[in-house]
Image (cartoon, rainbow, N blue to C red):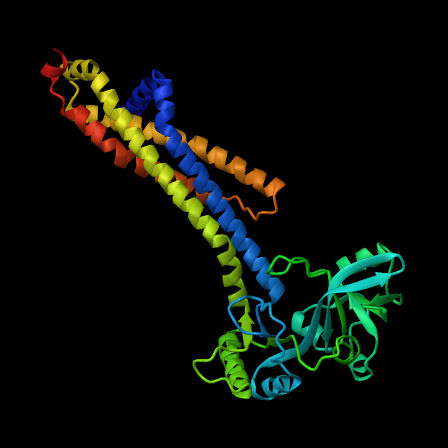
Length: 401
């Protein structure tokens, strides 16, 4: 009953000074709103990361030509060869599927009056198993296509839509950099890559056709592997690095002229993209709570000075120091809790708007509310103690003069 009375008295006191109450809670409101948005963005980013990693493949390893820290490499490196593929295949255990790949970006595709640009990949038959990426209709690239340097292609769904609309492209012909290819299949949809690009905007051709007829090159762009057991990823990755360093005659402290990436590397990279923004917003949320707490404390100290007669009368009719202390601390907590409720509502509204009107990944849950409640209680207690203590220590006789 005493707690209920304290809450009622605190709410009444706050309601008597609405503008003052607003200024006391605005910092908490902004801080909790920012915290709610940050956590929603963080949860959404985590889901997006796991979704994109699943696209990459949890048992997959990518070996890409070109060194450095940029992912993926941006230079036109010529360091990977078919002989490297043979060495990896013979020395690395637990490989379920493996496909060397050549790649050309921004290749022009024409079909009748339609024209589009997309990357083209020269692949081996194991590419489909290595990527867990089958055709939705038609046939995949097979061994006979590779052996005969066949001019056939398999289109991604976005590229198929650009060139043929809703019509079935299987059996139709396309010009790939002015070389005539027949469409033999259409890939299943994969969506967005870990880097944010449209994975369905692509075409596959036989590896030999890409190297000798279309691109006229002997080097590879990348090698894709899928292991039988994901627990072997780290060991296999280190083994591949050792094999390639030896084959490419790279001695310490020289940098690799290739990159080996796993699903863990992709997840780390994607998280890093949003990490800086989340850190900045977290700092701003913390500063808002700190400023809000300081403002609350100072306004309450002013309130204590203005309410000395009220405090004196309460002491005169029997209120103890503890009662006065609890009264002012209850007012501080009421302010921060009200700010928390309004801030949570505002944060949820902003997060919902971001999810509806922007491409940002946002996921709403109960966790921001629980953390906001904890932050509000801590702010109210920490910054409300000093004014409550000062009010409790006032002498009744002096306050009534």
